[in-house]
Each structure stands twice: as structure tokens, then as C-alpha cells.
Image 1 (cartoon, rainbow, N blue to C red):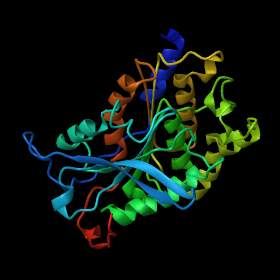
Image 2: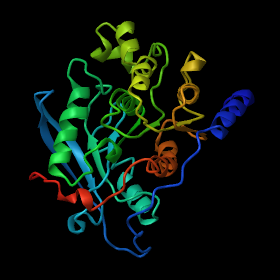
Image 3: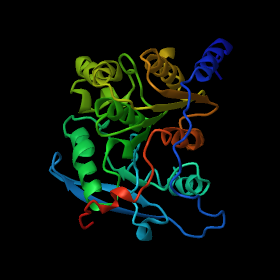
Length: 314
């Protein structure tokens, strides 16, 4: 457990989080509590132009997808290092969580896409993973599923390495994503710790190139983002008992707080939660219970108006 002074500071940041607006009118009545319809999940793959190879991804479809005729918002869920396109469904239990939040009326029925990005850190490195996911995969999903094909119909969510990716995609591609969630994200404001995989893997240069890291990291990306005058509300969460780094400032809760403070200083919508927990799903799943309803205050809900848009064969 961290020192009392730091915890007090964090509580103050949380208390000063940006106000949450009233949610938009729900165009769908929440299903009854005894609704027995179930969502569906499957894993597939598709050849992405930027990579010149296929990438596997898992898909979550809401319970009413087949018969509703609606178009749905899409969550892009990014896994951490060492995980894959099945991790959100396995250890994360995301299918049951989305079902529960939808049934309670806290979020609308959604589509979720979970790409397998290996240890790419979600950037264009030895392979153009960032381009492949933010352009090619989004185009594929919009063409083959009944999505709301606009920025306010998409959000990006990630944990650990994926939390770095969700922040990067939200700031670097606000034309694509309308909101973001980072869970224990690898948000090292300056250089990453000496034992970070950001240094070990060739994605930021081989050997590690600090200039490349800085060019892709959020302080530089935020400057460019602000000039676009597009809002991407962010929900930021971390545990207070995560890995203890040699440099105290590298700890996940400290970095999350610093990132939140920077966003608020720049007038951006954001929420911060420092919770009792480690670098695991016991921290991330409860945070999602708050984070998903928060971002859907700013995203579009399913509607019939857009359903007339053509959909390609899966």
C-alpha cells in the first residue's frame, strides 16, 4: 500500500474528475431481468493490407444482433503483452460482463472486436500494426457487421500494453475513435523502465531508440491531438498494488494520475480511478463496470436510421 500522502493526492484527483453529463436518451428499453437470450462469440481472421498477412480476432455480438436490424457501436478491446485475441474472453470474462451491463441498462448492446496483436505495442514498428488495426481492421468490421461506422460509434479499450495502445489510438486517431479506456496502461511519461518490454522488443528500435519512443508517446501525441479540436473522453484506472518499479514514478498508479492531471489541465474530459488491487483482472473488471457506462455518455447508441447502410458478406 502506498504512502498516505500519495493516496490523499490521488483521492483529490479522483474527486476533481471532469463532470459526467446526463446520459443520452436510451432508444432501447432494457431487456427484462429474466431475459434468457444470449450473446455470441466467435474467432476469425482476415488479411490486413498493411501487414500483408492475416490477423486473428474474436468477435462479440449482442443477444439481439441477429433479429434486430439495428446498427451497433463497437468496442475495440486491446490485450496486454503475452496475451492474444482470446484473453478478453478467457481471463477477462468480457462476454458475461457485457451481457450483465447490457441487461442492467448501463450500456447499450454493443459489438466487441478483440484483435490478436502479439507484442507489437500497437504501433507501426517492424510491422505496421497500428495502421492495420486503425484502418484495415476498422474498415473490415464496418463492411462485414452492422456497426455505427463513425467515430462516435467506436471506442478503444486496453489493459497493460493494450492500455498504452488505447491511449495512443484515442489521441493519434480521434477521427476513428470517440472515447477510450486505459486499464493499468503502460503510460510512462518519460522513458520506460529498464526492464520494460518496450526496451526489449524491436518495436521502438533495435536497439531501443528513446527519440522514437518520445515521438510515439502520449506527451507528443497529445500536442497534435489538441490541435484537431476533437473530444475523446478517457476513463483511466490502475491498482495501488501493482508492480513496484525501481523508480517510484514508473508505478502504474503514479503514471495514471500524471496522465489524468495532464488531460484535465488541457481541458479534456476524463475520469480517474485508483483502486485497491494489482496488475490483474481483479482490478480491471470492476474498473470496466464504471468505465464502460462513462464512455457511453458520449458515444452513440444503436439505431435503425443507419441500418440502411450496406453490409458486405462476413
